[in-house]
Length: 433
Image (cartoon, rainbow, N blue to C red; front, side):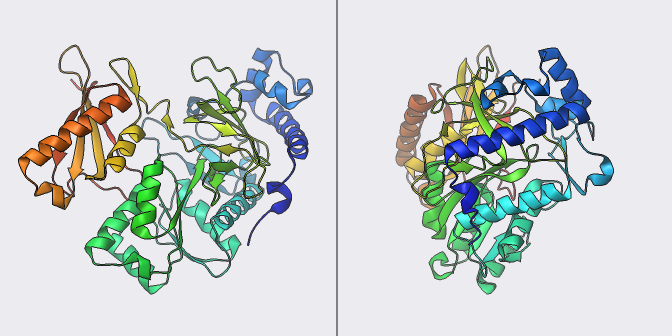
């Protein structure tokens, strides 16, 4: 087992002292090496010597994704380019991508955190880990790959897509752990079942799923259909990639690697820090990164932090599964709506497939929400009256959860597009004229 017991079970007082030491070093480095931060600190009237305790972190400026884009491609790097050995980048679907650079030490730390994460999921030498995250500028594929190698596992670098081949290799290679997005895992389950594959007869024991939002109901669905333990891994390209936090078998939140990152929860509107147990926006500060250290990076992810020691013995704070993003949240008739809320309702009902699409339009003065839901094969062939009853019950349940009236549109089985990476859940037509 690759378990860093010294750091993962460190008493909170010792952990705080380590964090402060590493934070001071990071703040001093970015002040000297990154003009963006030096200017931000000067505007705040803050110098590195002013950092006396972890409480002083709240006086430091935030960093946003736009800041990284404004300094594209290498303006946020804290070391010369000759010390960078790899770059990754976000998708850049809404403009220039945000670019991150890694030194050799950064890559070693990252691999260690992924090995730590996989060990948390029960991984060890001899496991066969099928890595179906995409390889390339996206951090998922290569991040999991090198961590699995460090763990001593057999890595199957199959990447995303080619589902028939994925299922064949799963059987032929005796895959014991699957790493991919939860929506793709669901697609694998669906395709395997259609091909007559009995997952209970496979040695598959665990799935490490991340890169998109998923619900507790989705976990239960994946565990039942794949006969595995499904665990959540969290990360984001700008901060490092997967491995920022990882869920243990207790399934009571993902442990943040607090010896490498300092997490905060803030009010997304005011930017004010919130106490443990409060729901708000997750903010992360890197304290070991060399290539591109980030101070108080606003993730836009909505979560809750819990500091209590876990039943597994780990002392690092646990973050609840991300409920949505402040920039992905839909505002419909003044009400905040997250796609994950719809997913949870559909899985709770169990009478449709967990594939859906939210279509938002504004044909008159008011927003219009249509939820396209894929019927199961059985329900698709049912009588019209039964479908009408299902539509009524589903619409009423969504109203109680979302506080928004939504039209339900049932579609044929297997007609909503599947994704080999992150699933597309929303089609917002309000700006299309």
